[in-house]
Amino acid sequence: MITYEDFAVRAAQLRLGIDQACHKAGRKPDDVTLMAVTKSHPVDAAHFAYRFGLKSVGENRVQETIDKRTLSSDPLFWELIGHLQSNKAALAVRHFDRIQSVDSEKLVTLIDKAANELGKSFPILLQINAGRDPAKFGAEIEDAPKLLECALSKPHLKVDGLMTIAPLSTDPDVAKHTFETLRTVRDQLSGSFKIPLLTLSMGMSGDYESAIACGSTLIRVGSALFGEREV
Ligand SMILES: *Cc1c(COP(=O)(O)O)cnc(C)c1O
Image (spheres, rainbow, N blue to C red):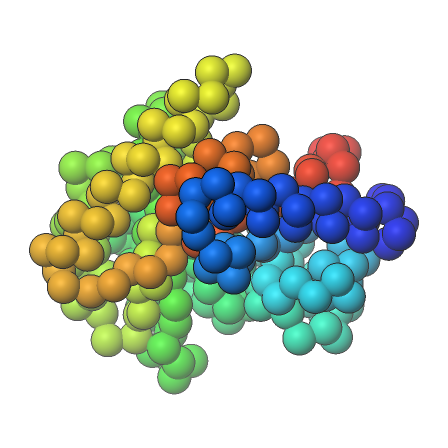
């Protein structure tokens, strides 16, 4: 794990990169939230993010997050960005502040049920496989309207927007095309369902500039902040 000083240098550089990407796109830096992806790092990573002024952290495992939250007293917003198995849905609702990886009607139903039992209204993003990558989770683009309709019918869910992960590729156009697609899907859904779907969670260490150019409002950054993961 790197030191806080190293982290702060990386985070400041990243902030600069975000500002530049926003400037190029004619967008306000305040419109893009930087989420620190702390998965596979010790709880210190979340504390570094908090100390630097970030408000949310992303994790991909339920149990790892439960363990870290027990050790953390920082008032952070913990988000699940990894695939969620249906048998862990209720546990995830209990221990996360938002789930970004909702990609099936089955999960929608289970999360709503768990939120109801806890007496809360629970925020989610719908994960869409906008890059049509067979290696990625996420609902198919064609299934997005039906999934959204299902989510909107649930009284204990709040649909904040959409999330996607670009396919791994050496060709930057692949990510760009994926992000443009998600933006288009959002605009269409927002128009036909007459809801804002303001959050577009797209862009990571290697492709956040392109994501910002395509309208991302939330970038999920791990390695550029903390270095390469060991596991
Ligand atoms: C790991 C992960 C990230 C962060 O990736 P980096 O390339 O390390 O920035 C972002 N989003 C998701 C869904 C991830 O699993």
